[in-house]
Amino acid sequence: MILIAPSILSADFSKLGDELKAIEKAGAEWLHIDVMDGHFVPNITIGPIVVSKIRKISDIFFDVHLMIEHPEKYIEQFAKAGANLITVHAEACNELEPLIKKIKEYGCKAGVSVNPETPIDEIKDVIGMVDLVLVMSVHPGFGGQGFIKEVLPKIKQARDMINKTKKKIYLEVDGGINKENAKTVKQNGADVLVAGNFVFTSGNYKEAIQSLKDA
Image (cartoon, rainbow, N blue to C red; front, side, top):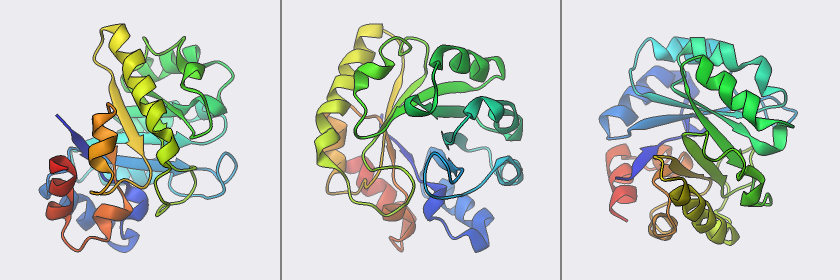
């Protein structure tokens, strides 16, 4: 089953509550929440306060993606704000294992992400501990970027690595996803597609989400 996780980064923040209800009604299973600090990536987005506010209006699965330095300082805050899954970047952590354990101690599922230029082998020692692997198909920091097709072999490598664990681990791809490339991304093993710009600028959220599922 393919899950669609529209990225909050592309939503209309002047009516965020309505946007959240709309994508849920349109068939999205997850909400992808991009957290940026202006240091790890050159942009600043939202923090735990916003997450806690929108948690009050929806039970949708909150997929919180921390694109920040020192993520260990904020795990508790995002968990208490309502995150269901918290993903950290391999590039932002010297030691992933204790961070993954900390995420789970606060009752959340744990994910690990790699940027387009980072070899998937960087996470091989912790892949059996996580619930999700996120492969970035754009350079993190901004929405609306084009899909980097050179990451397709990495998606396949990640799927092969996951399969060897014999565990249920989601493989998520984030960046430039649309109905033209969704089929190829899924064929390489992805089962969660993050689609912000494609969904939120579509004019019809339900049709856009269904087109990704049907691709």
